[in-house]
Image (cartoon, rainbow, N blue to C red):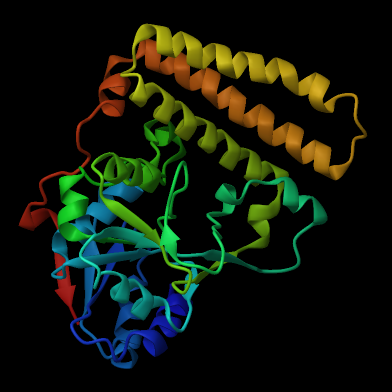
Length: 318
């Protein structure tokens, strides 16, 4: 987080009417100290918020509820922002038709990645690049949560972010499709979402995230996200859960013919392991949905926004 704040200090200092709100969703003890050191360099109001409920969507919603501005811009603590990042986001909302926007997310590798990394979907690293021209997003395109802005009224009107990652691995079945689900909801309401070519961020990716073990965990989580989207669109009807399971099973059975008779190259090994993890997740998720009524209710919630009681959120201004 300290690196992100250092870059922000040179990017947002002259932005009038801007505030920085840091939501601590897993207090480690040093966040407040880092903010105190950074506050004098930032030149804008800095507020610290603790959100004890696990889950990225809880942190995002807590920040949105506490924020004072009309435009909310979300980033993660492992990104650096480009020189024009903030101005590009704010400029977009001069157009009253824009409800949300996001920009490119470029990898900043800790060290040179292996050649086989090309077979890993960009989503697994939260990367995004739709080119050098700003334009409305279309079709199945989306924008990533680590570089996501939205009008406050649009966020709350659309029911907020869908569930995303959880710090506790045992809660992985509560995952949803995060900002992708929110963006689809905005589009279904005929609200305009923009890709901003100049609003670029650089995502720092550590070496430990490049192992097959780590990427398989990400692929498993991605399978749950896919299952959530599939089941929610079909209202968790029984036939849809059977279909979800069969999709996962059929895809798993196709993996061996697809990769088993090819050379055991690093690329094919990576493809095979990630596919196995993803489709195993689909089958497991379908089974859990069929057996667990509470999980089905969680998937079908109309909104994931909660009431934010003052005593639950401790906001401190430095």
